[in-house]
Image (tube, rainbow, N blue to C red; front, side, top):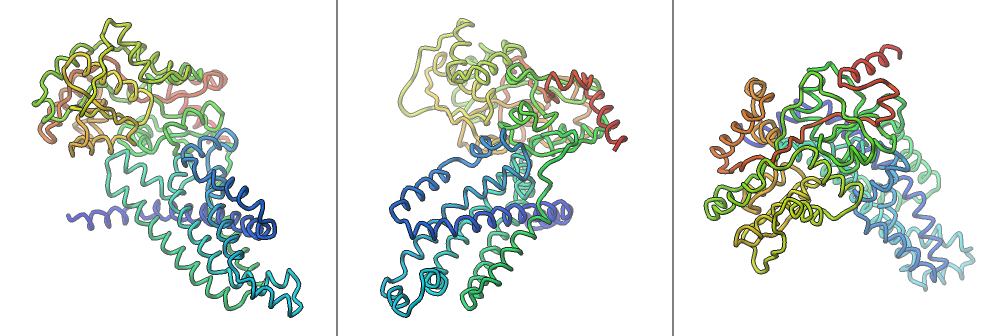
Length: 526
């Protein structure tokens, strides 16, 4: 089946979910844009009357644009929780600058001779604003509104990382699961929405230019306010809530299989991996999908719920190297053999804890650990790198990448460079396949279920045996992709469900079955 046909089939199969995400996306954008427009227009107008303050105010608003979207969402999370509220606030803040600046510039650029003529005809300042300045400035003002709207449609996809819904859910799931159809199912409607909004605002501008009346403007504002209230997702909930990553929500060994094995039915929101632990710590969610070696378990006093039905497969960490690279530099095998099987679960958790709790630099943590184990770490090579090491964007991967870097530079004659913090499994894997990187740390469970997309029957025969899983992914990666799995590092970073220790103790939840019992009882009392 051709790629367009595959995408079309995917859209048809997921049309209900896609429609819901599209409605949520429209609601978030409309609501944020309405608030931003209602506030920004008066601010821009006032600045034209107080021009000395204009540069300071506009510059101050412009600083917001320099804050990365995920960082801003992270700052808003402790204050407003997860869901639509922080998403709307973030979108509102990002929309301010284009509208305020264009309103100020549009009115400022009206020819002084026109204003003087209007004043000579006896018009008051208010009449000049309403009948002369605003009509002439309208194209520039609308250009700002249209720009802000298009920006917001794009940024709204990122808001899916904090459980606000929208088309970003499909995009981030697709990136995590190496599923191009899923990525396009979110990206294409988002692009079409941007074009639709831009077209609609262009038509609205032409209407308003012909008839600028308070009643018309008021009707438009009512439309912009009422519609979002009908379509945005609920902002608050009192139910027991789970915060899961996009990857966990869709992958075979994540929530779908968990529901089947345990009968678990949770009220879920999708949260960015870096914000998920923070949301749990700050009581914004009640349970999350974490990792058994994560340092934040200790830092945030979390409880790992025991997987009493042995659902989660093994996740042994190991370096994955391009076949071409290992053939060119066979000494890499000997370097990595020095650390194979030496890092325990507890050791990895402690290394993560140093970064997550004590804010130590991952490079320093890696170097100190190797020194404690008697390894050399003093060599730092310069010049064109022979090896490029990558990592995904979470603490453990940063540490492992730096460990790999130290081993290569101190136990081979090769030089290495780091590309840490790549945005997930698909990006790292694709970069490895295309020769943009040479190696990165991966997990056998991810290789089995996400990258190889192993059928359920085969996976079930392997998943509870670490060695079988490793042997299978090693063989299949070699045959299908010419990628080499070196020996595992020793620890098993399997998935886990986590709760705050105090909350789990209060509810007497120690296992995933206990969690299922509690959620079922709560559902029965509603």
